[in-house]
Amino acid sequence: MILWSLEMPNAPYYQRYLLFMKRAFYILFSLIILISCESENELEGVWIGAYQVHYSGDEPLLSSMRLLLDISKAELIYKTFDYPMFEERDSVQILKYSFNGKSLTLDSDTFLVKNLTKDSLVLNFCSNYERDLVFKRLPDNNNFKIDIKNKAFSLTGPNYADSIDFINDSLMLHIGNVFNTNYRSTKWAINSYKSFDFLVFDQSESPPFLIDYSFENEIFLKLFFTTIKDFKMTNIENVKDTSGIIGNWVCPFQNRQGVPLPRHLEGVDSKLYLRVKSDSLEIEQYGKIKSKKWKLNSTNNFIYFPEKINTKNGVWKILEVNEDKLIIERYRRNRKSYNPGDKEVIKFEKIKNSR
Image (cartoon, rainbow, N blue to C red; front, side):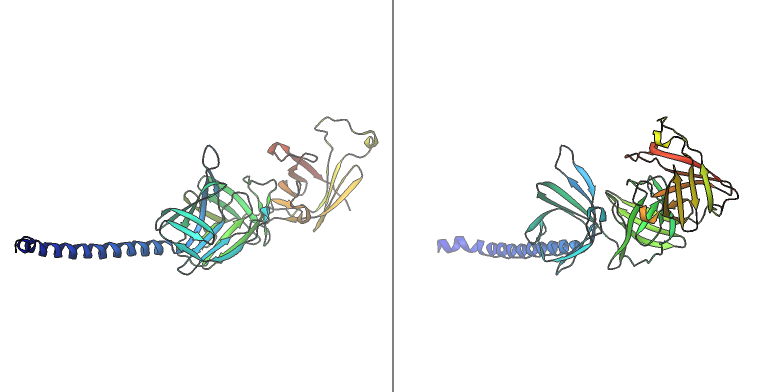
């Protein structure tokens, strides 16, 4: 009786405690499920590789990425873009994955999820050294089909301005002064995925541009790196008058280096002759003649040689042309470097009454 009388007052409290703990457990369990579902929902979508951080040295090193992740409940699609200079073709892989909120596992590879928000995804992994892969969620977009072949554009963005000419369906010329290759020519392509179109340049460390929209003679682009940058391409409509370029031209020889001529060339005509026809031209000096196919770019500011466009002198810049005078800029011959100082200006005079 004494024992019973001592325990009975605490029984209702104990029952209330059990009920409270049971409710708290259900609330916590529901919250975990909700957070997990929200994380999975945040993970789903199309992500573009913005940049990666390499921790292989004393200081972190940033570089661009050229890939997409398309994540749904059922699968993860891994897409890369063309990179001809590194002999890489665009590819698509469909993978199964698992995600527990802290890590993302693809086949045998596991990535630590360092950060996941509505707009940003940061994956960390180690392979020889530690690396962070930073992705940005792509906004909803509609395909904007653009016509840029055989057209020239100014390309402007934050602290950047250049001019480019899409001379055919796979090659473009840098017709401004900003280009990070040895030559003015670069491969280009438009790469599509679902509702997204990307303008891709075959240049080292050049991320793909998302084609955002177009209006009249302007095309608006987005570039994803440490920040999202807005770029604009504006059609260049000004065309140089080159109607007087057809004909025969001559340039007196100038020995700029002051090097004595070889004995076998003494007395030989040293003038540089240029004979321009509608689709080919001849270059003659010291009795040697070279013939090349040539074309003008969209703005008529450059002569380029389709069969030699990826060589040192595959493109000439036209500085001035009229019925009497032709001035071009090209790289000096017999120089292995491509520094701006290696360029030379050649002034031709029209040969009158020539056949």
